[in-house]
Amino acid sequence: MKKFFIFCLFLYFAFAKSYVGYYPLEPDTALTFWAIQKYKDKDAKFFLVDKKSAINLKKTIKINTSDAKIKRNGRFTAFEIFLYKNKIKSNECIKRLIKIDKVLEIMPWMKNQFPDILAFENRLRNLSPKKSGKVKLKRLFLFIDEFCKKY
Image (cartoon, rainbow, N blue to C red; front, side, top):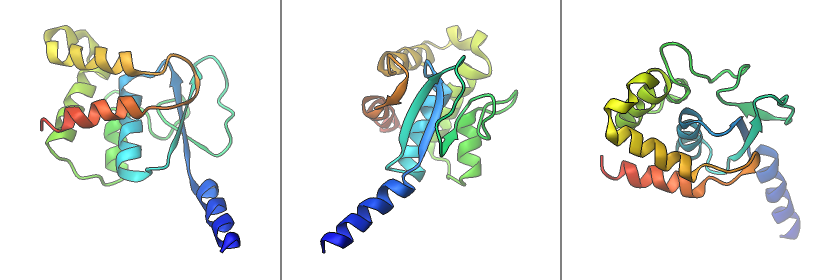
């Protein structure tokens, strides 16, 4: 039984994925991390690195970095790209989060026209990690989950 437990522990750590984004945490990356944890990888580990430093974390999946496969472009946010690539079905919450993310990341000059989006962004930033490295995002994810209960 002990050997089985050790084997299971090994499998857990061998296959738990790590995701990395830039510090400070941007709303688009925060929403993508939330979607990863909620829909794809409940045991995911998240890291933030300074934009000026090289990302040298082994076996990490980069999100919204210059060389990431999942990153925003002129039309889509990283959050949208992640949802599409992982075939995550849209619901009212996802639709609302996409609208918020689009304004914040693709059309930031418009955000002052939407007090609710500004409030969401401020709360997200207040809950974001204050330093780089391995980060815990439980409170941030809970905020997004609570926000989703409205929709």
